Length: 226
Image (tube, rainbow, N blue to C red; front, side, top):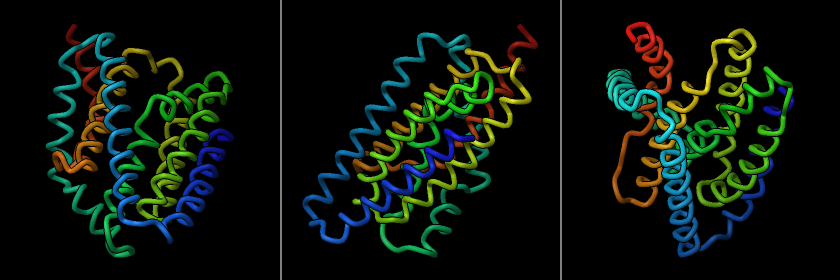
């Protein structure tokens, strides 16, 4: 958990630094930062899709997972519940910024592979690298949305911690094929977030998070009937 703790600390430090800039930031600069973050999210999402789509073992798996995950998320009304919870403690667009931060920090190759590599091989390189990147990103996000972005550190700790624990007990069950499918969906979710920030198309991105849990379930089913 050393790498995860470092990651969390970097987010807290970055959020603190970024929130100091927010106090005196002008609207035109705020708009520039918003556009920059939207473009960054788009770039990360497209890169993940392009990188992992060609290596997909089951090309329809991400489609089925997104569809089922979206339906489950809609039934649970995750997006509205998330926004309602955040709005109780903050005004403005923090909910959008926080959901974007959680997606960028948690739904990425380094954030997923890092805990696995740490648990299986005691290699913290991925998590240290991820922590540095998240620290820089949190400066930009906090300068735009405020210190509330620091709340994403809790999500990062729980997310990476859960993956770390599961990797310890499921070392032989984790394979490259599952990780590829997860990364494809991760890229799509981040892409959706970027489109929302740029006001191109508003998505209830949080409602699609269950798709990540659908992947391993569908993978087992496909393998069983193949």
